[in-house]
Every structure is written in structure tokens, then in C-alpha cells.
Image (cartoon, rainbow, N blue to C red; front, side, top):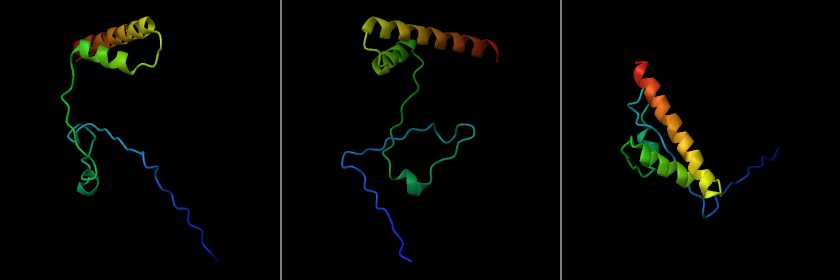
Length: 91
């Protein structure tokens, strides 16, 4: 009985980008050294600035109309600020 094996080759422009929270976070484990050394690690400080978040949201939204994109980003930032407020008062 002959066995057929498909060979899958990635396109030359294929790239893999992975993100994760630090392993010290609750419920997380560190990557194994064998997997970890296959990536380039970039550590970023978390942003607490609503202005930074607004800029990130505006940049990443795919809404073509700029006014609508900015309005949507403002609504999202308002919601984030609301969540931060209730999270602080519920602790």
C-alpha cells in the first residue's frame, strides 16, 4: 500500500507574527526555550494614555471616512475610560 505525503511549503513572503502577555501573568506559562529562540522578542511598556490608545485605534480602523473613523475611535476610548472607572470602583 503506497502512502501519499503532501509537502506544504510557505510562500517566500510568508511571515509569522506572534504576541503574548508575559508568562508571569495569571494562568500563563513561559514559552519553551526551543520555541522562544525562534522568535525575536520585543518588550513594550503598556500604554495607559487614552491619547495613545486613540491614535492606535484611528490607525487600525478600516473605516475609509476619516470623520467616521475618528468618531468611532472616540466612542471606543470613551468606553475604555468607562470600563476603567467601573473596574476601579468595584475593587
